[in-house]
Image (tube, rainbow, N blue to C red; front, side, top):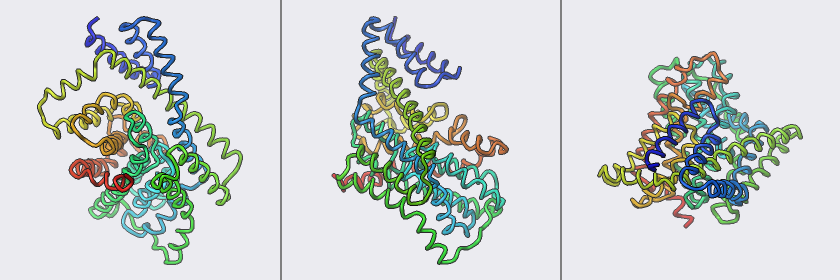
Length: 433
C-alpha cells in the first residue's frame, strides 16, 4: 500500500477512535500498531512495541514526572492554594476586579509548585469561585479568570509539559524551566491588565472588596513564605547546579510534605490520597507518552515528517512565515486535542523543521507551551473551560467561553511579543550557560 494513503487512513482511524471516546493513549497505540503491521512484519511490530514500552518505563529521566506531580498534589491537598489566594486577596482585593486579580496571582503562585494546568484550575476554582460569587462578580469574569489563570500552571516551572518537551528534543530541562519564568510572570501581568481594562469599562463586572490594613497585608505574607522558599529551593538548586531536575523534583515533593506538617494540614489520609492520585496521573501520562512514541515510530516509517517538511518548505513563506504556519497548526489542534497528546504527537514532526530554520530549541519550547496554554481555553474543546463548567454547572458554557475571550486576546498578544523578542525567554537561561 502507498505510504501516503496509509498515513491518511491511519489519521482518519485515529480521529475516529477519539470521536468514539477511546482514551488518547490507547487510540495512538492501536492505530500505530495497525499502521506498523502494514509496513513491517508482525515480529518486527511486536518487537518495536515491547521495546518502546520497556524503554519508556525504565527511563530514569522520566522519574522527574511523578515527583513533580506528587509535589503538586501534596500542595493542593495541604491547602497551600487557599493560603496563596488569601494572601493575594489581601493585597489586591480592594481594587476593581480585585478578587479576579487575586485569582490570577494565586494561580501564578500555585503554578510555582504545581506543574499541571488542570490541577491549578481545579484547585483554585474551589477557593476563588465561592468568594467571587459572594461579592456578586459577573459569572463571565469569575469563571473566565479561573479558567485562564489555570493555564499558567504549565508555563511557570516546574512544568510536566516542559519536562516531556525536553526529553523528546534532548533539550536542557533546567534551561526550559528558567526560560519559562519571565514569560510566566508576563502572562500573570497581561491577564491582570485584561481584568483591569474590563472592570474599568464595566465596573459592575467585578466590584471592589474591602481594603486590608497594613498589618493584615504583612500578616498575609506570613502564610506564603513556605511556598516562596520551596520555589527558590527547587529552581535555585537547578540554576546553581546543586540539583539536577530529577533531584529537584524529589526535593520539591519532600518540601511540600514538610510545609504541610508546618501548616498543620498533614495527615496520613492526605498523603495516601496524594500518592494515589499521583499514581493515576503518572499512569495516564505514561500511557499517552508510550502511545505517542509508537505513533511517531509509525510516522517515521511512513515518511510523514519528510512529507510535511517538504510541504511547508514548498510554501516559500520564509523563516518567519513557516513558524507562523506551525503556530497556526498548533492553535487549530489545540481546539480539538488534549494538550499533552498534541505536544507528544507534533514535536517529532515540527522540531526538526524549526531546528533547521535556526530557531533556538529552548525558545521554541516556551512558544509551544504558550500556544498550548491558548488551546486550553479555546473553543470547542478548551479543557480548562470544561473543568470550570464541571465545578460551576449552573453557568452556561457559552458564558465561560465569553469570559475567557479577553484572556485569549492577551495570550495571543504575548505570544506575538515573544516571537518578536526571543531574548525575553532566553535571557535567564543564558546566564546559566
